[in-house]
Image (tube, rainbow, N blue to C red; front, side):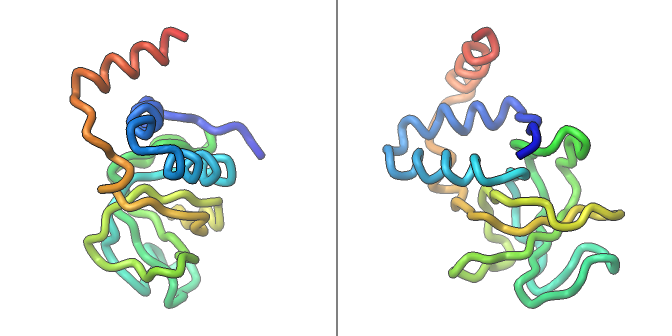
Length: 144
């Protein structure tokens, strides 16, 4: 697998997971190891593609990306943009659903399209960690 660019928010999420219990932490570590794209975002459309250059599938969803947590360096930070996710999970995604989405690359044209490896509902991954604590965690990881 190629090298990933990790953003500080991935370190914060990882540190926050320490308080969430070992099973979720292990699941996220496994998903992270199998993914080339990790984003936090909101489902904007279901059964759609974000660009005419992306093949239409019922399983496609358009994700409005709030944060890019990891990506191949050649792609860079695309926070604020929409991407197409080809969902593979058992549970269907709904408009307005928020989460952290783990994926591999599918198509990189005028639009980013990825295939889902897994997802974690935002309410389960973002554990209560104060902003001050997040800053300390990020700074301590950065200095190591």
